[in-house]
Image (cartoon, rainbow, N blue to C red; front, side, top):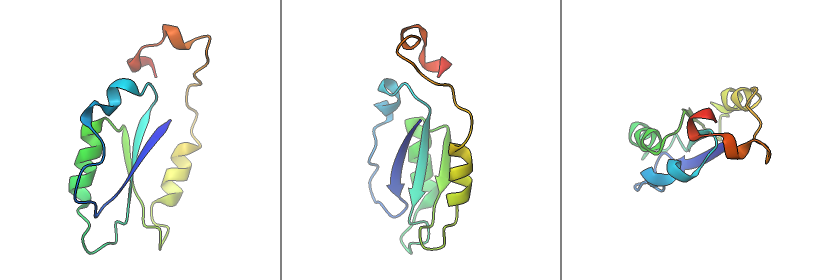
Length: 94
């Protein structure tokens, strides 16, 4: 699992849409600073979807909003990638 993290008040996209092409793991997005007066959550969420995030989590560090949901997701049962089987997998298998 790979997570990309970006603040909701970031004025520029930090991640290229081609990022997904070389990450062979499930990709999730974490948006922080959702309580910022300058937050543009929908724009940052769309950037993460464009990168290829399977899920996007909204996090407020001050109130801990969204943290329990993220932790619950991370405790899930994800396929393990080993050296023995990595050559036979495609991006869609992971």
